[in-house]
Length: 120
Length: 243
Image 1 (tube, rainbow over the protein chains, first blue to last red):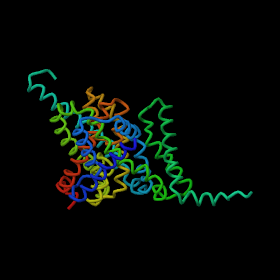
Image 2 (cartoon, rainbow over the protein chains, first blue to last red; image 1 turned 180 degrees about the vertical axis):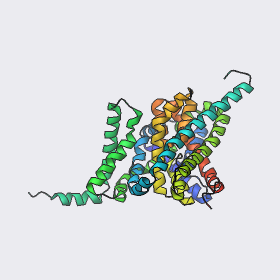
Image 3 (cartoon, chains in turn cyan, blue; image 1 turned 120 degrees about the vertical axis):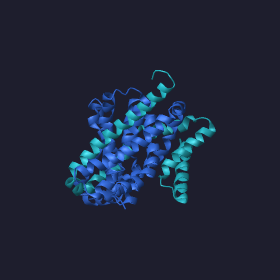
Image 4 (tube, rainbow over the protein chains, first blue to last red; image 1 turned 30 degrees about the vertical axis):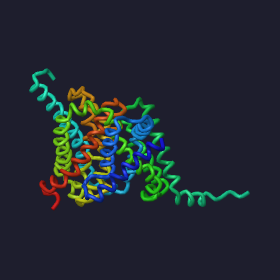
């Protein structure tokens, strides 16, 4: 547990430092994820405690968004004033995004399968 | 023995992170209970219920968001390690990942552009002001990336955080039903669409449905964090929203 958490924090720290040193436009934890992925690839496997720690963290992922969500109270006036535009963009924008992504991925898979001459 | 007056206890609690950290966990557990009692209906999203409970508590006690966040930041901090930990489910799916490389890459680019243009386009049609539009543009990507982009381009980072969380809730609530309507039965595709449109909250929902869906949702979230950070600034300049 402790080793696993340390490994994860080291990857995040390395990510944050690299992003700042190289002026990359991506957030540190995202680069940290790629570093951990590279590490797992080099080691050729996931140790049991690392797997368990990750599953615990990801199993409670929703909780971690609560503090940022409460921040809506700070922007209440703006949200109230433009709520139609915000609600429409949130609902329809998100549904359009999910649909376009899924259809594109299915379409490309279908095209690839057809080019190989097999049924999708 | 004299009892400490209630106000004195309140003064102590108000100054320490203990109270609001505990309140965050208690409200989230209560929200989870409601969610389970309601037959895990996606409409009873635990994040939305927990946020509503906490705002009610903060209003009742007249507490400022900054005071609340001093305690809740310990939970907020874990978003970073959780993002790093997404490498593990990804590694477990490495075989499928290799075979799906091209569909994933194309769906990623198309999806990221669709996310930004649909948000900004609908916002313009409904009369949102430019600051709101810039804050909306990165809403489908994960919180730290979205806040960074919003700040760089002249939006309100804390408003973006709220819009990102709301987007995640919308995706978690309506995403699975929409994908069923589109006759999408592949867990890899469903997961990828959930993660791209609704980042971590969509990923949390995807993990509840199947481990494969969760892994691909996490992959989409990570890739879109990269792609959005690279594509969004020139895209918004191109549509004339930023200079």
